[in-house]
Image 1 (cartoon, helix red, strand yellow):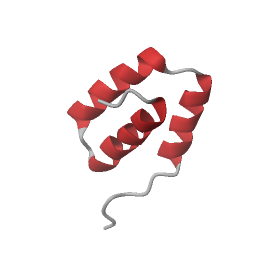
Image 2: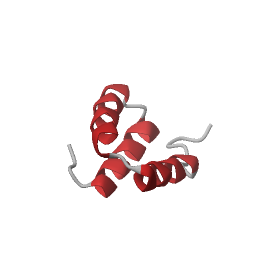
Image 3: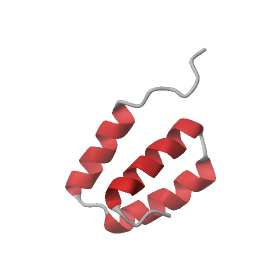
Image 4: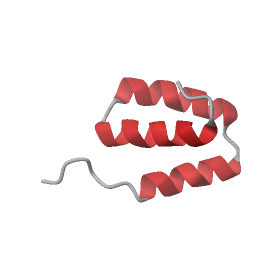
Length: 56
């Protein structure tokens, strides 16, 4: 599991794209321990701009 907040955000984004719920759960538990407002805003922007892995 990444220790760097930026890598953690990228890992969360990847888990969301892949639909990996168990990994997402662990990553978000780690994120909530280190998150401050700028990190929450960065995660929000990453998730908002997320493109689907597969398009129908």
